[in-house]
Image (tube, rainbow, N blue to C red; front, top):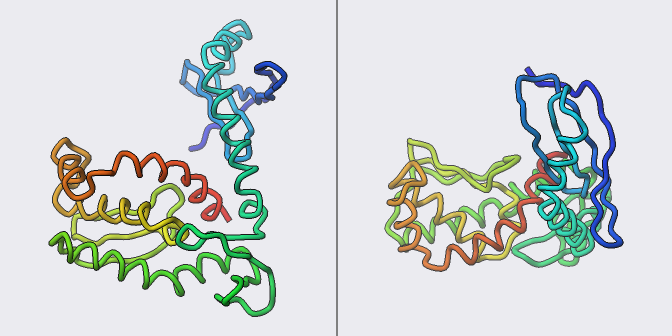
Length: 234
């Protein structure tokens, strides 16, 4: 059962001329500690026990000051960089930005992608780009000598892909929006799970072998994680 906030109060974190509003949610739960997260829209939320004093809340905010400021500024920068995408005026395909328009004839055109509603995005990407993603993944599997049972494309809210114990690999359709090297990392990551169904040292050794540059590309991949939440929360 989800825990509901019994009360929402306000606080503020200040860094120079930047004043960051914080929603403090007092939760009726057994948890005795605070937690903080910054949403993709820049909203900062602190969850704490309903009985926690403001002295302890402020002490927590002081301890998390640098983390809150850095993550808040990161979201603001991302909102500026990807404004057209977040406003549904553009969309990415293989790392390139393409105009996105609302119209009566959803489809992929030479100069735009047209949708009737937001729901058309997942359908279009699965139907129009899914097979290309699968072909790319099959080519990587062949090159590496990996043998997945099947490769499929669907939507996930918080993951780029997964591999089950039967050897079936599922890729998130949002992956088709990213540049090729990020796509390659996710696919090879899942191919490694055909050998190791965990993230053990052996798994990472295999990933290093098949994709030596994985740490650099992982950082770039992490910067796109907001797209998972943006498109799969529609």
